[in-house]
Amino acid sequence: MKEAISFKNAQWSEIWQACCRLLEEEVVSNQLQTWIHPLEFSKFSEDKVWLLAPNDFSARWVRDHYQKKIESALSQVTGVSCQLLLSVKPSVELPLGSSEPLEVVVAPPAKFVHDRPDPRYVFEGFVVGASNQFAHATAVAVSEQPGRQYNPLFLYSPPGLGKTHLLHAIGNRIIAHHPAARVAYLSAEKFVNELIDSLQHRRMPQFRAKYRDSFDAILIDDIQFIAGKNTSEEEFFHTFNALHSLKRQIVVSSDRPPKEIEGLEERVRTRFEWGLIADISPPEIETRIAILKAKAERDDIYLPDDVATFLASYIKSNVRELEGVLIRLQAQASLSGAEISLEMAKRDLKGIVPEESSHYTIESVQNAVAKHYRIRVQDLKSTSRIRTVSLPRQIAMFLIRKYTGIGFKEIGQVFGGKDHTTILHACDKIGSALENEGEIREAVEAIQNLL
Image 1: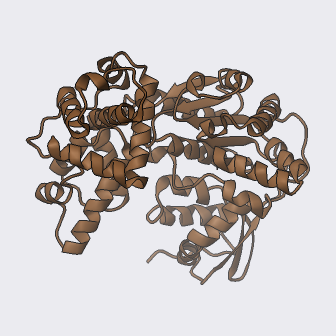
Image 2 (image 1 turned 180 degrees about the vertical axis):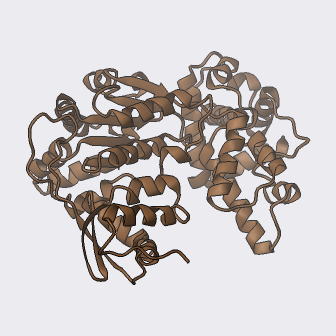
Image 3 (image 1 turned 45 degrees about the vertical axis):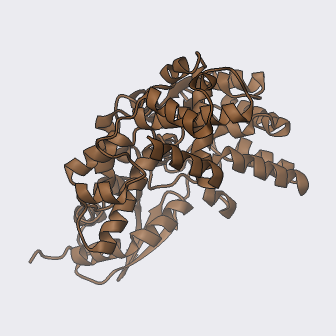
């Protein structure tokens, strides 16, 4: 048995290095880099070890998730039962982009805690393929040199393709490289709701101080939500200018590029175009298979190759839906006590993915939709905006996109030369309606039965 290192005789660095080697066997590498390695030794006294975390959030996270593991490693290395005590390291580091000295940085108030990026989403867990390679590369570049290039960074794609993952990953990488950095993640809806609350309770100075002075990097999801909301756009515009002038990093995401966000003020639109705009396309089949396998590995799910290929062949446009189907399969396998198999996938997912012998084409979908709604295929290709035609047209666009994987531009061409944003809007609208509107859900199921 290896002889324990004595607290009195060994340098702390030797003890800590030995502890980290033990922790490498239990903690994933990127988590070790993010949460364990930034800890610094403060002091020890008999069976107590004091460590310093870079900020209050980090201290709480380590205390909640890693304290027992660290105490166990310390005990193994030192040969005595150790109690770990965590506190926050006073910092005199400059905020990103700042040129003036700071007073000691105090941990953010409790109200900021929920704005932190989710530590589960990191670059190491993002599957890169041809469809998202550029967006991923720019996100990494921004996270490594925040405020210096690509500011702002504007990411856009249809729902469920990884924009939110990249936003969180940017924030987590910034924090890993700059532990004292103050990083906020929030949705545009949250920004608007906080603004409304601040107006109602006459707390606008606090609202402005929070978003213009309190963060070194701000990551806002679904920025299209502020479009058409005059006061929200006004406040965001001045917030943007304040952050940009201080070289604080701004990253926003949307379901469409700036020029296609209806109702967005021109002065806000031009601010988005100051930096870099990157899009994410639906993943190709190789990337979809890789996403499934990565998800299965993370969640310890047994996933045969033929099942991964089967699922990836039919679910083409939404990563979230792809992972959701895998979770459903795992639940079925747990309930039945059987392993996931191709036969199980085909049986349990009938109605979600088509039968292997099914052959969906643009023409077959258009014909089925026209038959269900008792209209002509030519009506679907017309410019008519009456609901009896526009709704069937949107459903046809949604089903063609889902089951053929054809691009938005190509689908637009077969519907009378419509713009790809029209197709994107239709797919988003019907996708949301399937969850909330029984009438549309029943219609889509009936059309699938016709097919």
